[in-house]
Amino acid sequence: MDRWRQPIVPLLIEPVNQVLLLPDGRRQAEVQFVLSEFDIMRLRAGYGCAKCLQVFERPWPEKCPVCGAPIRDKQAEYFAREYGGVERFGPSTTLADERERLREGG
Picture 1 (cartoon, rainbow, N blue to C red):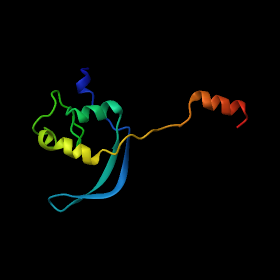
Picture 2 (picture 1 turned 90 degrees about the horizontal axis):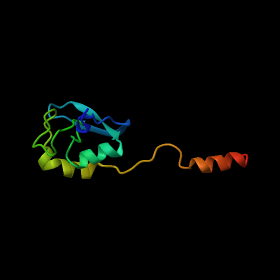
Picture 3 (picture 1 turned 30 degrees about the vertical axis):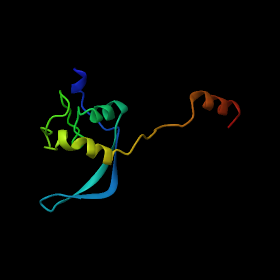
Picture 4 (picture 1 turned 60 degrees about the horizontal axis):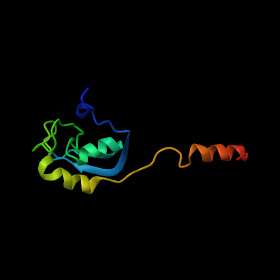
């Protein structure tokens, strides 16, 4: 499979305390996506839609073909506003630290 065709799959989806009001009056709960560094790089480089996570063969199309988001004109601004930074998962210690802790009986 071509690397660009790999779907952007969140590592984790977390609810947040925000609601999106849709044009027709419906309310939609907002979520936060946790993505891999590779997928974040693709969104920053315009190879994916930051709203629906559709991937693109060529960067920065005028609009997302799936959700219609204005990629070329607004995605960089949207990404800068919504990107929450890097989160680390798993233990904060190294394997060597854990072995030493176990040797000490901790």
